[in-house]
Length: 248
Ligand SMILES: *[C@@H]1O[C@H](CO)[C@@H](O)[C@H](O)[C@H]1NC(C)=O
Ligand SMILES: *[C@@H]1O[C@H](CO)[C@@H](O)[C@H](O)[C@H]1NC(C)=O
Ligand SMILES: *[C@@H]1O[C@H](CO)[C@@H](O)[C@H](O)[C@H]1NC(C)=O
Ligand SMILES: [Cu+2]
Image (tube, rainbow, N blue to C red; front, side, top):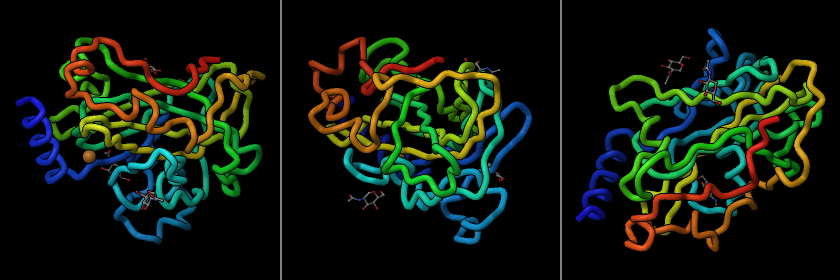
């Protein structure tokens, strides 16, 4: 019954709002518009654009899809958000409807200009992750559920740029993984260019690094999951896949 209801609600949700993604960013009181996926190609050369190009709010389904890095087509942005290490960057979503699965914020060093950086060469590290807050995998409260405000207002996802991170040009990648369809995980990634300022000299060791795609595969029980399977649905812990978070 729950399974039926959940998939029914899932369909309904898709009809009304068709998935989603990170649409805008804020740092302090400053607002940075992202790439409107239905706004047209003129945005490709907009001098104020900070977000890598994405052209649909639909999810990516394949763990080995090259677009898992920065969505499709993922073209670089023209400029970047200036931010001090230790400050928050907040990703702004609209009408997020899915409720089950982890949300992970990642960064990678562009090793120079992010406008010429190819994510094939990226080593990604986590700066924050949110999962199951309380209750069970199927019916408990996930951060992803709490995040969807359901009142027509924007959903806000703040994460902190690690205080000790060395200055430079980075991508910040916000990733929502939605697990409401059995054995069919949905990935919603978007990337923004940032210029980190500060006095830090820190950088994560190899144990914190992952390739994207590469970090996930369908042999992982946390990814290839059926949340309605009685052996899974009643569990009260969910291990977020990938390396540990680097907090600096
Ligand atoms: C990768 O994902 C994109 C965006 O969802 C999709 O258009 C493309 O067909 C996928 N590629 C593969 C090889 O599955
Ligand atoms: C994102 O910013 C644009 C303006 O650039 C605005 O029209 C839109 O409402 C914002 N979206 C959200 C979800 O805040
Ligand atoms: C900054 O982000 C952290 C999450 O990393 C959050 O707990 C905190 O409330 C945020 N602070 C502000 C002022 O938004
Ligand atoms: Cu969706």
